[in-house]
Image: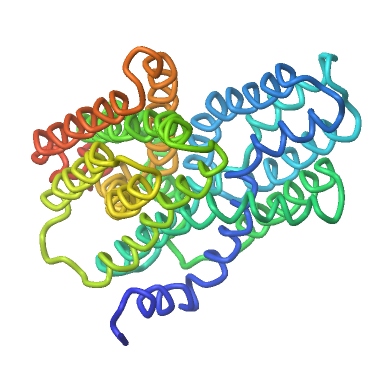
Length: 421
């Protein structure tokens, strides 16, 4: 077990050049996976309707979708310190104002929710781009992205539990304020950590400026990297990620409908949790050994395993059977996510890594949202089993797309000649 995955995680996360930044990145991401829920609880606690609570949560999400690519681009061009310092202050401030100075029905509360979404510290994009730049070996980098995938599963399960624990000691508003403040402090800490030379994303640009300043004076500023989605490999990868997220959204609607049709809806949470637990255990079990197969060849196989796992839900005839199908079928999910992040780090232009990771995350969120909307529209006409079938077919389509794009994913980004030099 000395060479097992837990040992690899421990060796990576306790390294002198990694430990501090990894710790602050976890703290800064605590609000990410619970804030929409917390906002709904706060608005309801203030006496607002579900429609008003939904509006606040929706505007928060809209602000996040609109602001995150712009903030990530600034992160790539200006470095993490200024961006994380500003967002680390504005984000908890906007949420504190929402809780303590606004009320449902007024204009100020939706505006505060929108501003908070725009100002969400780009901790995910920052850390995932740093893993690509830190002085690590290829195997260590794959371990880092597997850690990112596993951390996501842990935070998705654990962050709402933390919110519930805080609410036991006080109100939903106080709990939201505490979580937002801790996240803001985490962003400030992540921005202030000292990193090895050459790790900062502005290093390429700075070298470009120095090269441009010759005996005749400055010639021209270094070329800005094109948008990540203008690269065919990155565009293909985000398309695969969006397609693979569609089944997640479809099943998010089909699972509670199936449980309600086979007994009490009160068991939905336990059945749904088996999905995340299966993904986390799959990462720990299947990720124990390093594969010698090239990632662009391994990735389509992982997506195919994910698709076949999705198909297991079609065989479920009861709540326990569905729980087992989700736990077993969900085993490859974290591995697919880790492979996606590793591929982003290899195919995206190194000058725009944070923006590339942001677009990748948005592709997943968009696919999930479209899947949920489609699942809701199809539930009455085809039922949960029909939606499970559509999820299976969509996942197979994602696998087919991944196999078709193997050649693109094998290549790195095409850089301008002067940048490559």
